[in-house]
Image 1 (cartoon, helix red, strand yellow):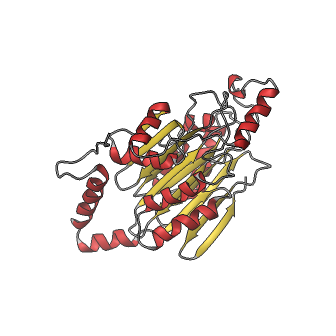
Image 2 (cartoon, rainbow, N blue to C red):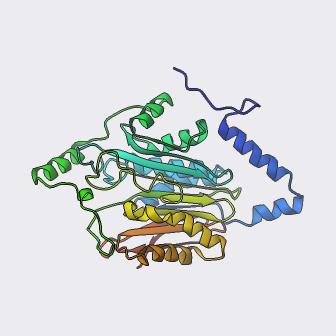
Length: 337
């Protein structure tokens, strides 16, 4: 069956209509105002979390360098990580749930229109963030989940395939042999942290040459999660958020705690009020710890002017880094407590 596209009264699909509307609004500005809009941004720049960040940025940067859209650069960078054969916490072959199945959460957000697309508990589709983009561009919805998200992806032309590989299968079998139940059955009391391995969510943010902002994230979640679990990554304001007037923010870590506080939305609103990215991420994490939570997690933020910063909680033995690439070159930055 041919996929139906949402169209405007002019026959354009949703994304084309949104981009045209943005261009029309810019064209209506006085020339001096338009010049100011172009000058007041730090693009092109791209940022990706963790140690796969430099490689992801190497894929996304040429898109920006050639004048492409931030959202295209974000998708390309995240796809790179989703398809890595040995990345255990993003994409296929990753951490299994309680019954041995790998499922994916992902989200994309486009600054000019504040449009969002996301998938949760996506099954048997490798490029989760690209499915999220299809939700954003081809439908009026913001979030699809589970097998229904998979059916949507197949309708959009994605290949359905197993997300399990030999490594993830052996990892699950070794856990089953210990006859242990998932830690998700044991509620986490405030003030007490139970160790959660990994949580290397990929989050990417970009400002393009036109000053537009895109953000996205993708993950397969936590070890041995309960079937049906959806974490923070596909929730706007939790896993990622952006505003074209302000910047973008991404989160990584214990999503079951962090999503209760919408930390990326909080970060953006603090930046809107004048905080630097570093100050905003620190304050957003402090809001969680002030409630008594002890958790492992981090936030990275990128302001529209190109300034960036990050903060983390926990992960004493985990070197949380993020990578930056812009016209001045590349950096791989260690986030200190």
